[in-house]
Amino acid sequence: MGAYPNLLAVGGRNQVPAKPEPAESGDIHLRSAKEMRGYHIEGTDAAIGHVDDFIIDDETWAVRYLVIDTRNWWLDKKVLLAPHWTNRISWAEKKVFVDLSRQSIKNSPEWNATAPINREYEARLYDYYGRPAYWDSVYGPATTPPHHHPGSHLG
Image (cartoon, rainbow, N blue to C red; front, side, top):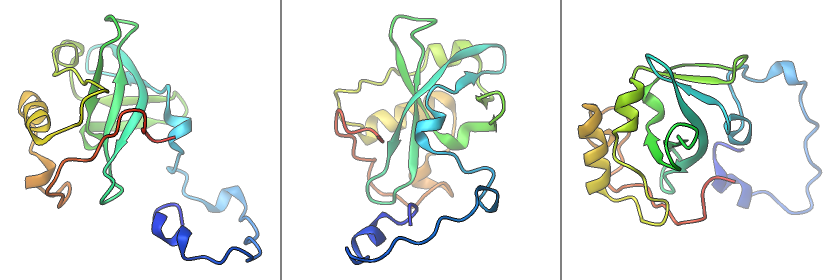
């Protein structure tokens, strides 16, 4: 039901909750957003920051961006990376690997949490990294940028 939030409103209020299934029956690659916060970002040449938050498209429920906090390397700069730009995730090491250099992430367009994400910012971000835009590619049919409301990141 977590993948389809609208189903939460459909269920009755007095229903007995289903018995939880054993942990080993779940998807071994599925992790909560809460657990992934703090995972370190490993670029092609060095560590660059950590996952601080997520930006969710409120129309499609797709995770559009990982909010990367680079404050350990630069003064409180946060940048966005699209999840499909990752190479792999090591659950054991709590690391997200990306095929981007530390310098390219450092010089990427800074994300301002108090300003709405708009198509102009997204186009600049995708152009900077030389990546195909999700609104024009196989990464999603969205026609509008995800709605970001300051202070309303994924819990």
